Length: 206
Image 1 (cartoon, one colour):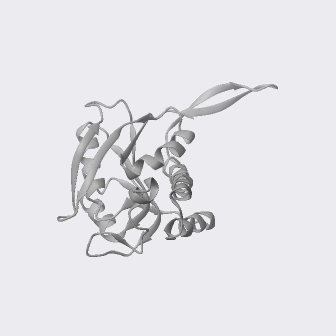
Image 2 (tube, rainbow, N blue to C red):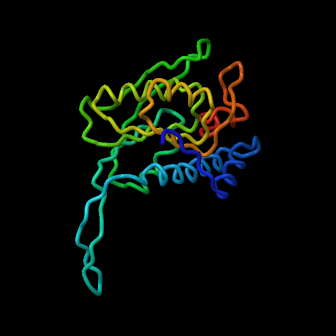
C-alpha cells in the first residue's frame, strides 16, 4: 500500500472546517491536531509489537508493547502543528526537525535546518507535513532519512495533491503516503487546489 486516503465521516467533517477561509488560527491548529491524530492512528497500524506479561488487579494476562522505535520528522514550519497529537499516541517517539522552505520562483525545496543524527536509532520514521503539493519537500526529507539508514518511512499529510503523490511514488515507491484528502491539482504558484491555502501561515497567523 503506497497511498491511503482516510475515508471517515469525522475526518471529512474536520477537513471541511479546516479548508474554510473563516476558520481562525486557534481553531485551525486544533483541527490540524485532530486530523494528525487520525493519520497517525492509520500509519501506525502495522507497527511490530512484542508480547509482555501484564498484571491486572485480578490476574495475569499476555499483552503487547511496541517493538519498533519511532522517529517523528516534522517539516518546519507547518509540520510542527502535527507533532503533539502523534506524541500523545506514541509518547516514546523521538522528534527530529527538518527545515525546508519552497523557493517561490522555482517551486523547489531548499533545506535550511536539519537536526537528524547521522545514525538514527529507529526502525520507522514518520514525516509530518500538512500539505503534500509538488512533493519536493517530502522527497527531500525521504532522501535525508534514507541516507541515515532508515528504510521504513511514511509520509503523513492532511491534504495531498495528485502531482505530489505521483512525484513521491516515482522517486520513492517504497514510501507509504497517508492523507485525509487527495486533491486533483496545483495552481500556477504550486498551491494545492482546492486545498486550504498556506498551512503554516494559517496556523501561526503570519
